[in-house]
Length: 289
Image (cartoon, rainbow, N blue to C red; front, top):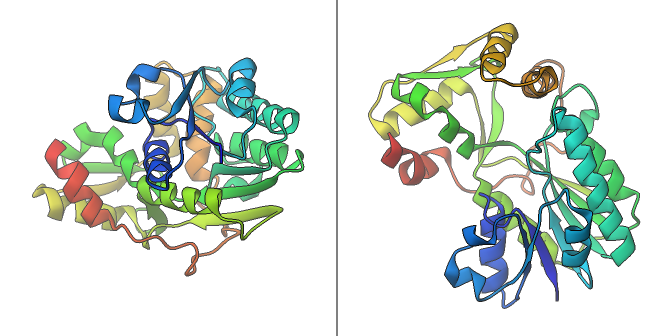
């Protein structure tokens, strides 16, 4: 069985690769920088150099594939929604031209709205493009990754976790490694077909205040959640040199699901995964703080 994995060194992709190897497969990895694939893995996989925006590389990697794990990574495009849709079009072309029968796509909670959720709008477009190929397609609608906290280390050291969401609003938070496990289970399963949506919600919905409390308890630091306005976030992002489409892409990811949003696939036995924020933070966050 030939399974193709994109973003193979990412938080989710690296877990997908490890599990496929443990299942006895030799996966094909599409990697922008093959040097980032560790030597122990490199000798057990087939490597294709390129990224998801390169049609020739994607076509080459997916030739003869039985299944594809696809991620729209952050793109260099000035408009991140257009960049994500551009990569989604490359995926759809490869699936169609190479006759790839099965795709697991790493999407996001919020993609069900189709518009108005910033960068997630690009994932929604990719969902639609993949569905039009005729392949069996599973969209993993993932919650908020624990690993997003790694981008806020300086603020956490200073005792603050900022968000544009109300600090008491509970959201699904998930360990990316659990997303990888759900992805592999479905890549290898013959138990589904057609178009399917499966949310990956983590073990529990958490508010930013609860997350701050867990981080504080694990690290021994006093951490408090603080809500900022959308315009405050815009100012920070503009100061970092982002274009206006990039700024709005980030802001709307939160504001687009802040009010009057219900996930298409709600929390259930099937959408709940085991790893808690506390256990993840002990392993990954505490050593850095």
